[in-house]
Image (cartoon, helix red, strand yellow):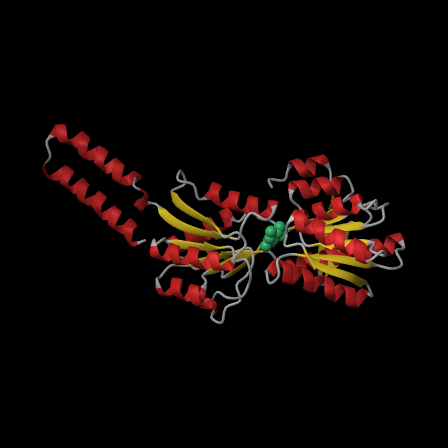
Length: 354
Ligand code: GYE
């Protein structure tokens, strides 16, 4: 921020020189110098963004949203560092951002733990940190300025409430679930796992096998293949994102079984990306809870407030929808809150930006 103040002072000094005593022929030169100064990147808001990786369609849409929002034309300089799903790379990236004296750090953390030290370094350097998507579990909440993301456990409660209502409506007697988890220790994994385990206890469902799919299609396929070999009674697969679901569907079909409402195995998923919803439209995914990745404008809103020295909410949850193949279940109730379940059509998919 300091550098932007210096740039503004330089511009003012030049304007004064202009009025005080330059030859007319020099004015053009000074004005063009002034314009150049204005275009200098030091006059922009600089943001260092430490991204998890490229593991899923959700992640790509998330990075894209940040890039589109924080473009040069919009007055920003965005430095994106991709961590390849490794926390140590994120810590190194944050240290580089501190070194480069960026104005803001945006962190999409791979896991919740392990941020105290480096976030303290950012705080000591006077750089606000905005956390997006997954949460950080830190001993001192003042180590980050704001967090923007989804209520992952709520997403899970919605999907489980859908399964309960659907199973009751269809007279499904026994529920034997294969559980494909996301990256261990990520908020999305923790929330979606807790939600399922609580519902399984409450409704008497059997979780017959659990394996990580690390939020990727390939690992989702491998996990499903292994679980199908180990257990023959699976009739539901609970995938913690759409990419894992796509892999699981391939493995189920390769094993000669069918997915879908009239098939052998019901597939449940999270994210509701374009490709995820195409699988819902064809019935391959039965129910998909939205997890919205378009955080760019939300982060910009926070930054604009901070620039104006306005107060910002430290925790900001995103509102999300639910989608299903058919209208067997039209809404689910969690506590007092009722959530609509939208049957997927071509139009619903066309309207999705990710
Ligand atoms: O569901 C998954 C991604 O943390 C919400 O990470 C995010 C999850 C998302 O890789 O697709």
